[in-house]
Image 1 (cartoon, one colour):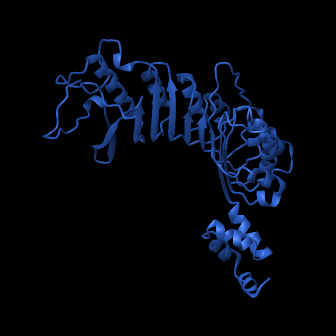
Image 2 (cartoon, helix red, strand yellow; image 1 turned 90 degrees about the horizontal axis):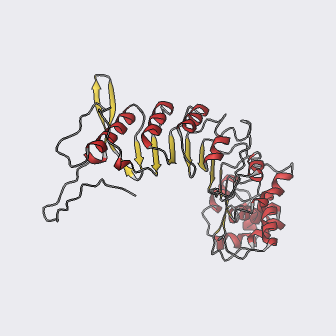
Image 3 (cartoon, helix red, strand yellow; image 1 turned 180 degrees about the vertical axis):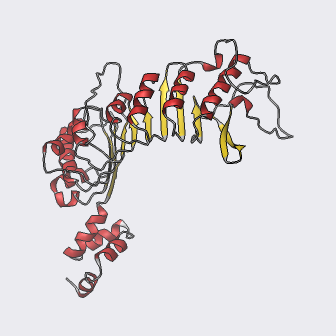
Length: 360
């Protein structure tokens, strides 16, 4: 070890880590060749964040991590994304399984592989010494099967879970019973509906985003009954949206963001006798009366969700404003899409378009 390296190693470890975190990769590689002590620090930063995309030029890093557990333990963020039709050999998946079992210091893991590749988690599952105490974020394209469930049991501090796999009609989704002792700190979930029904009970989730499934009033009540701290909710339904929204409004009282997609053509609602809202429809608008009723009924439901600040219905973003209703109380008033007006520039061409504005 030269004199400069000797003096460098006298510096506090926290200071050296901070300095090395600002060095480019080429300089870190040079440090690995200067001395064994500096190499150990440099390697922690070289392998800290690994992102292997579909066009990566260095897939050999996976076998390298599989052969060198001390390097794999340096990894904090690991992302791999393989195209569904990419030619990947079995030996690569075996190396990836070994590397994942070695990455026990992970804080973020993203696996975008073929849906049939959940076996890459098995080496970590069957090794009783493997645990991921630092892992906070896990995203994958794998189905919610027994391998994924067993892997989640090794992540005691997981905070965010995202499952991108959407079951096909031919799949028979596994809905295991997951005890609350597994992932007790989970607060955010995004994925298929059947996985949410298995994960939500016993956990205080603040965000649920369902990618598939047909939301019903019974499912709304089940999810709301399982967690009382829900702030963000997104889902889709093939049922008429108004009963679903009423169920959400009565069950999820603390919502701040709500997004509902529906396959129903709610702009062509059937005519009904009477009006369930407190705001009479304007006679100056060209919108049909039944559709006005529908939108005002939705606004009435939103009015009772006191903390709601953002709402989207089938791509339509609703505006809102606060209104003082008493000396000590303010309530949020929601503007239906047909009540939104846009200023027309003097030099612009006017169009006769009575359709609502859809923001995608």
